[in-house]
Length: 117
Length: 113
Image (tube, rainbow over all chains, first blue to last red):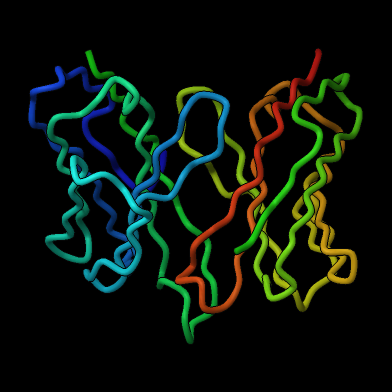
């Protein structure tokens, strides 16, 4: 069992739908991440939140909108997605986002498998 | 930015044999190197990591070695078991990256019973 919980596990949506992915951790971590992973590829970083503030946005299209309501929760709001957005979306967390504390291991959830029709 | 290469892309070994996966990195400032195991339908799971002030680290059947001069690090799995079958990713990161990980392309390991 992972300590990072993602819901839903599977999601099928049409290109005009609006949906949200949710991620939760209770390890007291202050950095949280969204990744996109295609089959047989490594995870690709999308967003990083450090102390609830967006610190990295890897030029992700605006149809993906992240939100960090508090230190335990991370959401990814989806709107008007394209078929090529079908992928596994992974959330991860770490104690801090680097800096004076040094680099920290990231702990991943099991992801949301997203299919766009 | 950092570039991490990983080899081989696929690896098959007999149960009980050893498996070695190698990664190279480009940025000499990188100082933290985690390894992840990803089973089918699961997220990546951290299995071992090493920092640049250490040359080798071992945890039961798993070990990681780091050669800073050559900028490469390797994962060694001894006495492989069928449950070791998975995709393994190496990663590298350094100071001033906001803890952003640069992943290798992955190695699909199959342990044949």
